[in-house]
Image 1: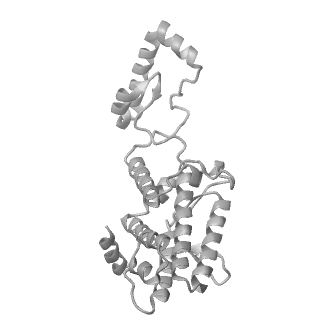
Image 2: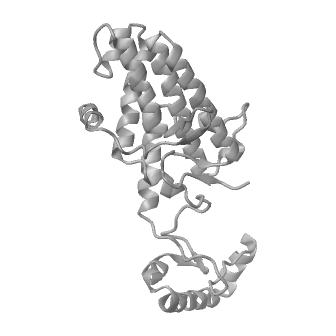
Image 3: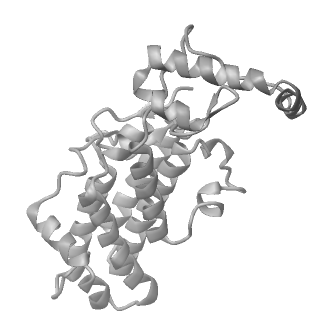
Length: 269
């Protein structure tokens, strides 16, 4: 099965069709619960749980770990940080680090192969035929100077035994994942932290007004206003909305937030 990527960057998701269907189903059930529930605390916690799952799923997909996630052994929760703030920082740092690296040239018929052998053979080669390693380094430098001059300096600094060991993107990072993740701008992370702030209140308090205050909401209509806020956050953060038949479709890009939301985000920072 192929990986799926949202070309409009509406959905912070990259993975298999089954993963996307599961996420869409979680959002659908969450929307139903938020719409019907009269418990302000339940509304906030359920909304946050879906976002927490979506972010974890995005991270494990980026590192190719989703294939190891089973119900009895789910690396989304075993391996990744338990703290949602730490999870967001991991996602931010992954995007930042990967975005700053140059791609290797795409493999082709004229691209020099890696040396693959046992450790014992390479050790023997280095001890008894060290001149071969130096010769390969010179040939490799010559090749990149001619074919890929933009990488020649990197190769000179990082090559050993015909293997480029520096300035690469992490091997196995799925094609398209970084493009999707990079569309989660500062406003997206700010809104995620806005929801997390309310979740932290809800996790330690049953008082509806205290929880609502995390959103800056007060008054007798607090539950209805928080409900509207959570439904809006689901759409902006996850970008999944449903048509009349209950089928998920892409929303507008999640990084496009209103001036009011941006102002409230500034207060959280």
